[in-house]
Length: 206
Length: 206
DNA sequence: GGTATATCGATTTTTATATATCGATATACA
DNA sequence: TGTATATCGATATATAAAAATCGATATACC
Image (tube, rainbow over all chains, first blue to last red; front, side):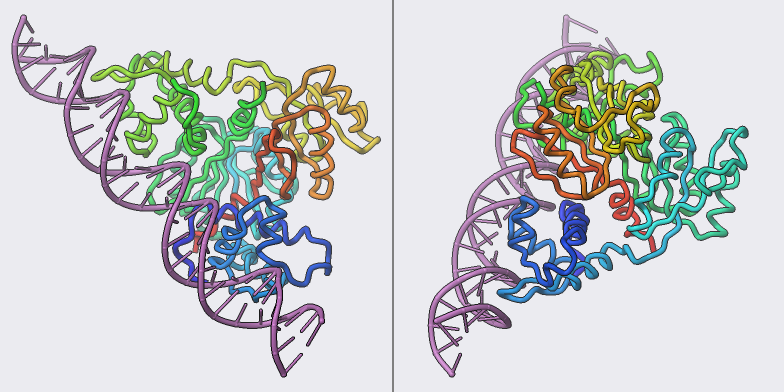
């Protein structure tokens, strides 16, 4: 159950284990072994066991892990039980799609506001979320204790938006613009470039 | 310029280098050194040099790499010059957003058709792309030489759609459903779980 | 033209990650 | 109740990736 010495690669596998467990037929597997998880996910069984031991308690020999306990351990380790508020900047095509996306709730996240720099969209509502002027971001984040932000603006504005976010107290940023963002070490930035990712896997096709 | 011995981590950095180079002020940097790229992107200079040498020719001492040559080398290595056709299955919220997304063209990809299993949407058009019945996927892929597919359907249908794609000759799949897909070794599958990724980076906030 | 230097590529070292091995243990089953 | 075995956790080995080191070289500058 130690929280350190957990590799980044492992951290990325934990959500995979979790969704696999959640997708198991209800009640059919009260217990599950690292071996069978590994087989189902095409991973090494030792790796699975090691990963799980980093995040959860121990399994029992012969039977494995209690499925429900394992699920809630993972959820708790990944903090899916929290209810954190998120803001998004940029309400173009991608921004709208993310506002519309309903997958955040399951991981304990909730987009509560959107910001843009185009006066034409101020006050408009996308999927129940009002679009505000970017100038209000700092006061809004302060009032609502926002720590997490999503950047969905064109490349050239991304760094500027990032700076504003950091200045507003945000310390975790997911960036969809294909540019490298600079921020202090206390800020965690994750870049998502869907097109580039698709291009990478497509490299292999003849 | 050797094409082997290139690590996955490196492969993921190449698009970062490329977008950095493309975002440089026009004409201001005819040459650029690995050192300065590294500094700008917060990476080790040796790593940058090694990455670039894997994908491109050599730079010249004292001046570095010719910027334009470097850009086109990377584009060519990443095959951004190709014109590959892509299909998408699932035209719900996410599917529509992806159809609407305009970032694929820049990496040489082009979504030319969408499929769904809901008769209510057959024949409807999303952003100029007609939605077809899923049953037509095989013939369509055969006729159009499709090798790349995107899965944007609910979890429970993902594996079934994956099987259909493979059967249709598709060998590169980007999967947005949070489930592990099984396919032959010759099929390259990349899972994208935006919510889980955001949750991971949010773990750090207090 | 000569020299100092920034940059390169190659090699080595260190670190991180994944895999394999081994003894221990709790459960299933005779 | 006793034994065989699937599974566990821990340790050790192997592999992969990142970082450091070093000599070589082409360019800038004197």
